[in-house]
Amino acid sequence: MTLRKQLLLWLPVVAWMATIFFLSAQPDLPHPSAGSLDRLISTAAHVFMFALLALLTARALSPGRRSGLIALALTLLYALSDEFHQLFVPGRHADPWDLAADALGALLGVAAWAWLKRTIWISPKSRS
Image 1 (tube, rainbow, N blue to C red):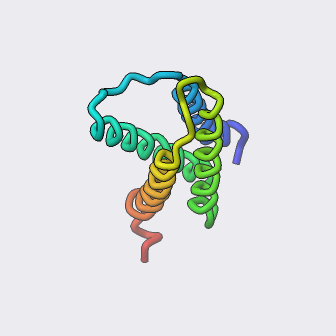
Image 2 (cartoon, rainbow, N blue to C red):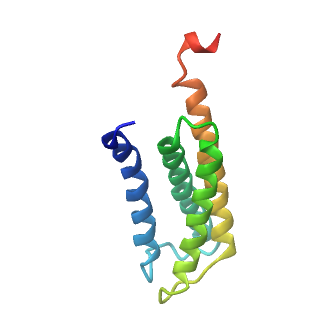
């Protein structure tokens, strides 16, 4: 694989990680103050952010046989580092619930990647 192709695969991963880092560094993100609705929106955001990170990472690692497992591990490590990072941001804190949502997102992202590979990118000839 050429360096250019590797860069094109990994650039979205790094850009998405930078986006997560930037959002985590904000002392106060805008959100509704509606109790459980606030928690639901925050959890959904965590699931989405880390699902996309896992999917992009698996895509960058493909076509390796264990790309999904490695992507899951790397995404979980990034989720841990994200929560650790928030310990140093005024107004933020590490939250086990957020970490659980990140892990769920990572699992969903890897599952989505596996599904996409099987259903969309595998040619009909290779299925027989």
